[in-house]
Length: 168
Picture 1 (cartoon, rainbow, N blue to C red):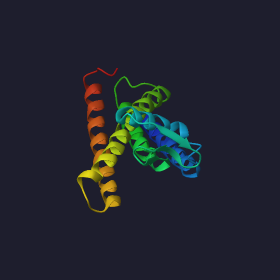
Picture 2 (picture 1 turned 30 degrees about the horizontal axis):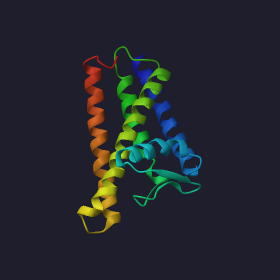
Picture 3 (picture 1 turned 90 degrees about the vertical axis):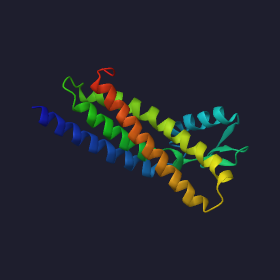
């Protein structure tokens, strides 16, 4: 019966993944404003600057000459992390219901996304002063390295907490 429950959970996760990807693909910056707002506030706090929301553009930080827009939301990271930890959580002996699992996993994935995105943006802001080559390529490399680090580190931490029953 556990295998059947896991199959149901996997189907639910895949549906959720596709559904959110579809919604996000058709969403405008204004419609996902709530998702990029916390990232903007974290960057503002760390850099001691201020961003303003520009309709259809995103959060513009004049001091840093930087816009936090739809591409900075980290939705792909969020979804990959959500699916990974939700599935891992479903493998526990005393696993929670799918609803409780998704709520807990979503909150953890949201926190990890905020940390990863903030780190990636901070790297993007500071790196051009250290390097002087193709900035677009540098931005892609930074995103890959930061997201991969956060995915691996956060997943391993979550797995460790589950194995040691700290997260239960």
